[in-house]
Length: 198
Image 1 (cartoon, rainbow, N blue to C red):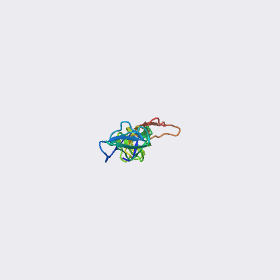
Image 2 (cartoon, rainbow, N blue to C red; image 1 turned 30 degrees about the vertical axis):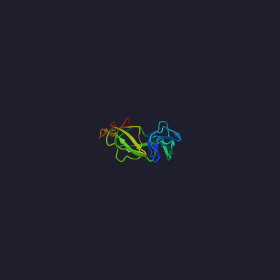
Image 3 (cartoon, rainbow, N blue to C red; image 1 turned 90 degrees about the vertical axis):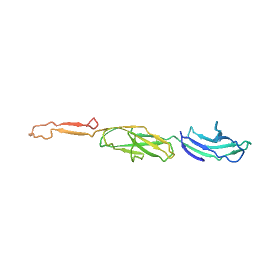
Image 4 (cartoon, rainbow, N blue to C red; image 1 turned 120 degrees about the horizontal axis):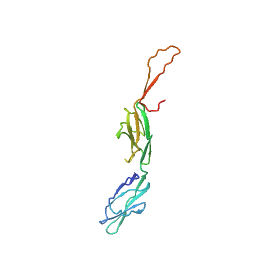
């Protein structure tokens, strides 16, 4: 290609088309005006080791030592895509919800989002934030996959979610008749939820 935008960690293959001259041809690829060691074929795969802007071109020499220089291709290398989510550990009761937020860096915007619960993509959860509303008590894992504009993907850290059964409370006795001057003690029974209680 003549113009490439990529993320660090990706690679791109450059192809050449040679016409005229007297074959066979010899090839030498150049990166930022410096000959690339070992890049002596009609194609070359560029795997950058740092971000930045690069230029690429090819010199071809035919069997009569006639030389030709190709057009110059430009390469923009963005930082590698990464994503994290917060919070990383949550305890809630059934009936409650929790909103997860994401922080995306690097890559090539715009980004596409897909949230996962227990390793299953959650339908419609395609924004940078997601409100998790569990349908039942139990233990859940949550993470986010992000894809950037050039199809690089990154997976976030995993958040752990503990969902306890719905809090309930009862008191006894449930019906009392006393005379003025007497007293009665009420007892409570609390079940489920997330202790301590107050």
